[in-house]
Image (cartoon, rainbow, N blue to C red; front, side, top):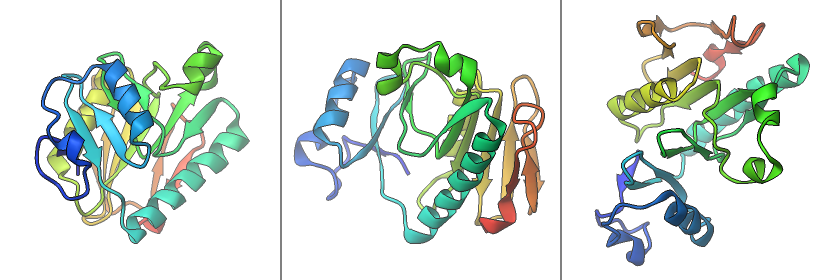
Length: 200
């Protein structure tokens, strides 16, 4: 669950709690360096948010999710995958870190070494958000729509508590899969089959 840093929270450094002005991308980068132990994101309107640490079961699910995507990425060879600690600089100026993501190799290779080392100025082609107990579904839904609006071709929102997968694609209606065993990435990620039942 994202928290506005203007709200008191015992887990947020006191000097961040009073941060009420709109944060610029440059300020955000400095804050990430200064508070490297926090998981921070930035909305397109400059709102600084903090993502709480995950519980053990969510961490286990996320590890399995990234393992499956990584295994396919290695065998396929057409792109690069990233874990939940990766922050991307989206075209709308938001700074987001999906739980798992993938970028086509030609798009990644077009970035400079400096861009690749920093918050890459690119929206992943494929993004996954994995709901944790503290996440509001409406907030994650908005986040998925933001990815699609900024260039993602495919997005999956996985809700292990209701055993649902929400599938997002540009210019298409939202598809809701009830208790699927496998979700396929074709044609964008040809041959990628996520064994979702292992995440329940």
